[in-house]
Amino acid sequence: MTAAGASIAAEVGRMTEERRLLKHPFYQAWQCGDLTPDAIWSFLDRVYAHSVAAGGTE
Image 1 (cartoon, one colour):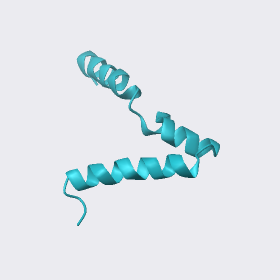
Image 2: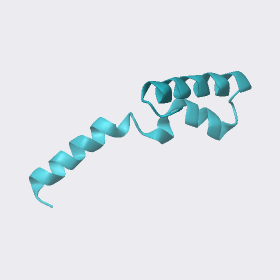
Image 3: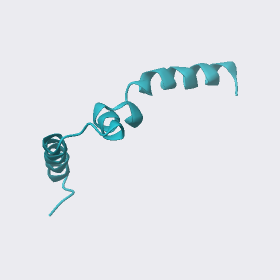
Image 4: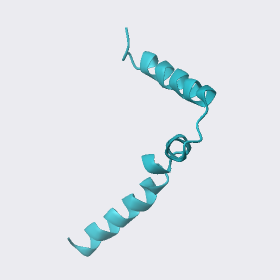
């Protein structure tokens, strides 16, 4: 990889670091066993709403 390519790869890595799934608060709470049924339903409601808006459900 060229120096320019490495620089671009490093910048993309920095930009996406905060969006990594493993750092998402819902996933972290899931891993720790800290999710309440209400938190799970709330998350599912939001995901479903996005799916409907994107035309992903019938």
